[in-house]
Image 1 (cartoon, rainbow over the protein chains, first blue to last red):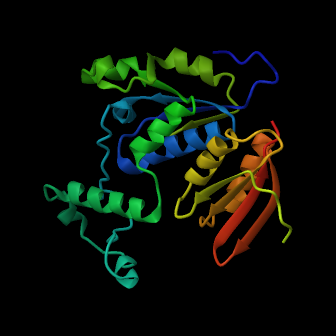
Image 2 (image 1 turned 180 degrees about the vertical axis):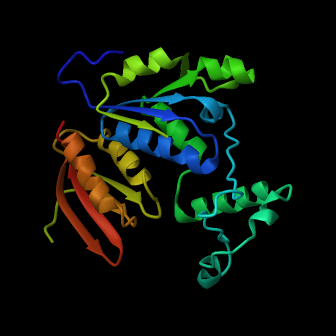
Length: 173
Length: 79
C-alpha cells in the first residue's frame, strides 16, 4: 500500500464516519472526483459511516437538530419550490418525519441532477477507489462481511494510517 | 469559433458535480491519444472543475465556450 514510486499518482485518503444522507455525499463525491483525476483514492468507513457500505444504502436526512437544512419542496412551480419552509424543531420529532424529509431531499437531488449515493458508490468501485470497512465497528454493531458490497475490504486503524501516511490529501468526513 | 475535428461527444446536460468530471474521465479513455472529446455541460461549476481536471490529468482543453448557460469543452487526450 506504500507509495514508493515518485511518479506515482497523487493519493487521497478519506475517513467516512457519518451515515446520514447529507454526510454520505461528501466522501463519495470527493472519492469519485479524485479517481476521475487519476488519483489513487482510499476511503475508510467507520462508526455510522460503515453503513454506507451495506448492499442497500438506507441513509436518511435528519432535520431534527439541523436548523440550517433548507426545507424545500421538489415539485410545483419554481416560486413554490424556492420557499424555505420554517418547520418547528418539535414537529420534526413526529414519527415518520425523517422518512418524509428524506424522500423530499432525494427527489430534490434527483431533480437537480445529483447522482444517488448508491450510484456514486458503484462509480467509485468502477474507478478503482479502495473502500475499507472498519472491523471494530463491525464487531460493535454485529455486522458481517456479507452485509457489505463486494468491492470493499475490511481493516482497522493501522490499515488506514499506513495508506494515509503517503497521502497528499487526507480528510475526515 | 474555430472548427475542431471532434472524435467523440459527451452530453452532461443537467448533471451536477462530480458527474461532469467523472463522465469526462471515463469518456476520454474511449478515444485515442491526440483525439478530441467534445463535452457539453449546464453545470456552472463545470469550468473551474474541468480546468482543475485538465491540470491534474494533463488532458488539454483546446477550447472552452459558454453561451446561454451551456458550456462546451473540447478536450484532447494526451496520455
